Image (tube, rainbow over all chains, first blue to last red; front, side, top):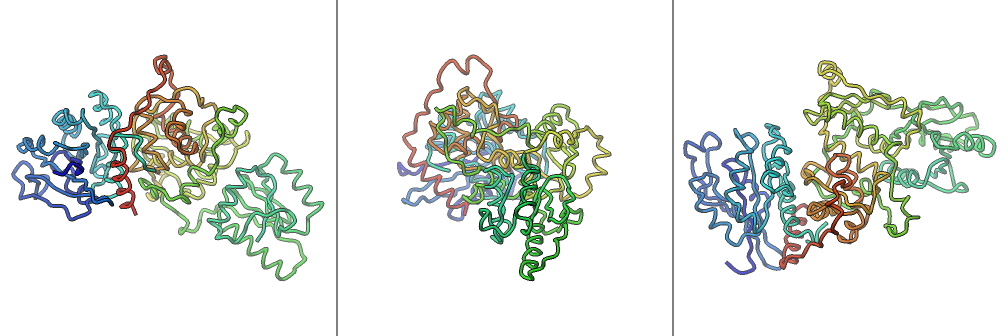
Length: 182
Length: 374
C-alpha cells in the first residue's frame, strides 16, 4: 500500500451497519464481500460480510482514505489484525437491538485493544430508534471502566451520511484536535 | 415599513432586526425616530410607561404597536403579544398600511393579537431540524449570536460576556429539567404561554410551541412578577398522558434543552461562570442528534483531554469566543460540564496538545467530509 494511503477500520458485530456506514460515505460503490448468512448470523440478516467491505474517500490531491469493514462473525477474527495494519483509527458500530450490546462493545474494544491504544476509537450505536435501551450513558459507563472515557459515543443511523461523517470527524479530532475544521 | 422601537436594549434590538429581516421578509425594518412610519413600545421594558406617555404627548398621530408578554388592553393602539409571531405583526402592518394609504383620521382600533389555540398549522415546525448538521453562517447566528470578541484580560469588558439565567426562561426550565432527572418524575411547567411537560425517563418533552416561538421566548427577560407566575409540578403518568394528546408535539428532550440553551446564550456565558478557573467536560455530546455549532467537535476533543479555563480554550484554539461560550453553556445546562472542584485540576496548567505529523492530512480528510455534507 502506498505510504500516503491510510485506512479507517469499521468494526462491530453482525448487523451493526458496517457495510451500510461505509456505503454512506464512500466515494465509489463499495466492494462488498458477502454471502448468504450461516445459521448464527441468519437470524439477523440474510447476507453477511465474510471477508471485508471496502470503500474509499478520495481527497482532492489524489490521496485516498481506504475504508475497511471487518467481517462481524468471530470466526473471521484472524482478519482483524491484518486489516488494522496501517490504520489511523477504529469506528466501532454496535447494534442496540442485539441481546447484549454492551457486551458486544466490551468484546470488540478488547479485541482491538492494541490498535486502539496506538490510535483511537469512536463508537456509533445503531438501531436506537427501534430499541432505546441501553442508553448512551450505559455505553459511557462501560467505556469509563475501560479507561476510555474520552471516547465519542454517538447515536448513528448508518444509512445517514451526516451521522457517519460526524462519527469519522470525531475520530479525526480525537486523534488531533488541531485539525483544521469548523 | 419603518419602525421606531422604544424600550428595548441593544441585544433585543438586534434580535428584533433579525426577526424583521428573516421572518417578516423584509417588510419592515428598524429605523430612527425621524424616518419612522410606526412606533413600537416594549411594555415590559423599565420605562415603558414614560415612553407611552411621551408618545401620546408628542407623536399621537403615528400608529403605535405595543408589545408585552402579558395581554394588555391598549385603547387606540395595536397590541402584539409576545412572543411575536411574524404573521400577526404583518397583519397589523397591513392594516396600518391600508389606513395610511386611505389617509383615514379616525382612531385606530385596538387589535389584540394573541397566540390563538387554532394557530396556523403551517407555522408548526418540528424541532428536529438542524440536528446533526453543521450550520451555515446565517443559520448559526440565531444559535451563537454575532458578538465580537472582548479583551478577556480587561475585567471592565467582562459584563458583556454573560447573561442572567435567573431572569430567563432557560433558568426556569433548567431547574425543572434537573428536578425531573433527579426525581425521575414527569414535570409540568405552567404559567407562561403554554404548558411544557418533561418526560425524563423517555428523554422526551411535550411542547406545543414552534421553534420560532421558543426562540422568541428565549430572548425575553422575565420580570419578577412574571417569574413568580411560573410553576413546576410533578404530575402522574396518567394525567400526563391525558393532557399530552398530540404526538407531533413530543420532542427529544436533550435536543430541546440544547436548542434553548443556545438561543438564550447566543454566544455568552451564564452569569457567574469563572473564565479563569478550569471547567470540565464529562463526555462527548451526542452531536448526531444535536445542533452542531461551529468548531463544536474541535472544542470538545480539545476540552476532553483535561479541564481547561475558558480563557485557555479560546486562546489555544484561536477561534471566536462566542463558539466556546455557546458550547460551554449548552453542555453546562445538560449537566455535562461545570467548574472543577478538585484541587488536582488546578494544580498544573494543562499541557498543550501536540500536533500529529499527519495534521495537514487529517485536515484534508475533514475538508472532504465537509464537502460531502453538501
